[in-house]
Amino acid sequence: MKSKVLVVEDDRVSRNLLKLVLKDAGYDVLEACDGEEALRVMTSEPPGMILLDIMMPGMSGWEVCQRVRNDDELKEIPIIMITAKHSAEDVENAKKYKVKGYLLKPFQVSSLENKIKKVLGVSHDSQ
Image (cartoon, rainbow, N blue to C red):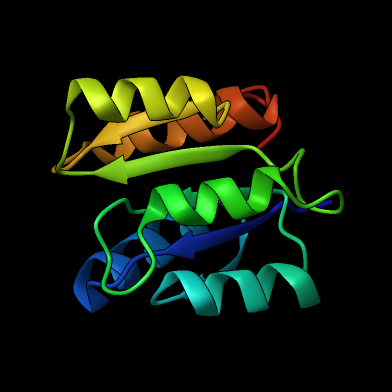
C-alpha cells in the first residue's frame, strides 16, 4: 500500500518539485498552498505524513502543527518541516509539537527521500 503524503507549501515551484519527487518515489501526494487548506485536506483525507513549510501567509506551519497535535483524529500523523528558516525558536517548536524531521531548503532529493523513508519506517528495498 502506498503512503499518502500531504505537501503544504505556499511556493508553487517548491510544491511542484516536492510533488514530483514524491510521485517518482511511489507516494500518493495531496497538496495544500496554505495552512487553512492543509487542515481541510487532512480532515477529509488524512495523510500518512505531512511535509510542512513554516513560513506561509496567514497561518504559519507552527500554527498548523499545533492544530494537528490538538486534534484527536490527526495528532499521530508524522510531520517533517521543510523550511529555509532554522532558529532556536524553531528547534523548541519542533520538540514541542513532536516534529519527526527537519529539512532545510535548499535540500538534496536524496536527503528528502531518506528522511521520509525513516519517518514512515520504509526499508530502502521495498520501494
